[in-house]
Image 1 (cartoon, rainbow, N blue to C red):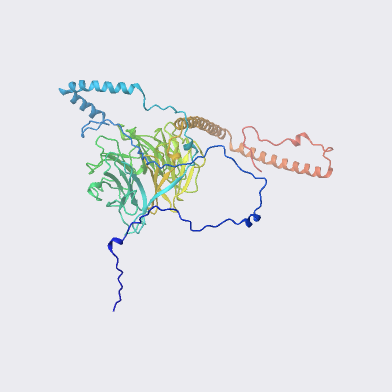
Image 2 (spheres, helix red, strand yellow):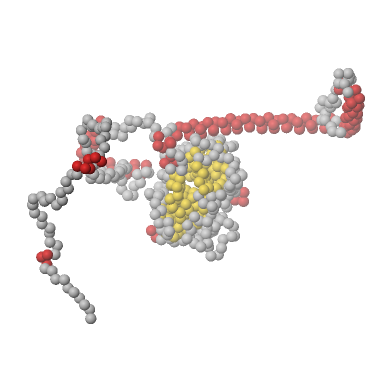
Amino acid sequence: MEIVYVYVKTRSEFGRQCTFSDRMAEVNVDIQPDPLQATNFIERDPIDSGVQCAGDMSEHEVNTERFEMETRGINHVEGGWPKDVNPMEMEQTIRFRKKVEKDENYINVITQLGSQMDHCIKQNNAINIYEEYFEEEELAGVTDEAPSAKTINVFRDPNPIKRTATHLSWHPDRSRKLAVSYASLEFQRSSKDMSYDSYIWDLETPNKPELVIRPSSPLVCLEYNPKDSHILIGGCYNGQIAYWDTRKGGLPVELTTVELSHRDPVYNAIWLQSKTGTDCFSGSTDGQVLWWDIRKLAEPTETLVMDISRKGILENALGAIALEFEPTMPTKFMVGTEQGIVISCNRKAKTAAEKIVCTFSGHHGPIYALSRNPFYPKNFLTVGDWTARIWSEESRESSIMWTKYHMAYLTDGCWSTTRPAVFFTTKMDGTLDVWDFLFKQNDPTLNLKVCDDPLFSLRLQDNGRFIGCGSKLGTVTLLEFSSGLCTLQRNEKNLASAMFERETKREKILEARHREMRLKERTKTESKEDRGKEDVEEEKPEEILARVQKEFFDVIEGELKRRERAKAKLKTGDDQERTFDEEDDEPILPKPGEPPSDV
């Protein structure tokens, strides 16, 4: 039985408000003073008291409503063109302008807009709103900051059998994605269970790739199309070329035939600057450079054999590993070979022999990276063996600048896209070196230990702040540089240009000096050979035997006289009393035109 006691209270008494009323004051306790306590007090004499002359002040704080600011920019581009007209192509724009100018309403529209445009132009000419009043002021914050870098993200190969991250490519729009090709380049060491897949990573989600690229053979290189960010071109380990459209999934849209493809792995593939945006070319260690149109991959549009003897023999061709193409120089391209030679080519030459213009030789092993300076295209960077070298097209016999020989092998390198004097290199010991030759020439400005595994590839973002480094075990590390390494310094362009010109001039002087010395040495050698032939023809065998015997006995006689003088010196003991025969002191010299002989 449950005992419950219920307290009963009326509802009106719940939560009743307290009501106060005014009343007179009441004295509850009244303690009267005790005169006897006065004897316990001590008088203070003298008394110090402070007086404040200023008025009393009070401090008040007011928290105002927060005002949020936002930075916005406007990009002014030439607009109004139809979708089928590319404003970057001059021929298409001229053709479209002629078509519009023939329209009847063209003159009326231009007349109406003329007055409005005239008013806007006068406003713009009244004052320059973009005028810089303090151009000479130097930013102290940028120059004083020490170069540094921090790791932003790490993308790991999700497969259990790890492969090398062979190539990186940034998404051309906003660079929020990174395409990475994976392959094992160790000959006949790949496992049967090894995956062929490559991946496109989103920088915000490193745990899972955004898209899986599924080729028929492991991809050695993978490159975004700069004109269409949905298209990628890839070079396979078996020599085939394939292209993907990310809107259609991870399977290749089209693939080249094995018979008309490369015979070795395709180490590099680069998009060309064309009207259609579908042209590219590839290089392989089979000694061929092939041009392709992805609209028709059945066969290459053009072929060039890397035979520096200009005979076009494939057996004598040098294997291509690195390719370089500068859009501002559409007819020129460069090839870095596995023999350490850079081949400069001209695609628009009439014959295949004329397409190979010249060569640059300076590395002891394969050239893994070849890159032109984005600010000064006639200067280019090569990375191979244990050094990185900077070349000038005007100096072909030797590089104008080079790094020291490192203990670890160099694997890749590239120029900074924002600073003309900065470039990056990766090494087999897992380090990334940042070089600024205006600051230091002998050592890197910044040395970063990215990982314990060998680094194999790197790619810099277009803004110059982020860089991706691929390792041998498929780990791609994304790094962010400090603002000093990606911000153009004051007067840096002029200083870099002056250094390039000075070093090029120095190399030209040295080349001329070496050429002169080689010519003198050749002339001297030829004269010696001619003189030696004459001596041999004039001298008879009997004369040679008599001359050799005489030289032999002269040497013996000279040695006996030297011993006699030594004995005489020991007997006398006094250097001042010793006398020597002047004829004995004379050394025995061979006759003019005769070589000296030994005892």
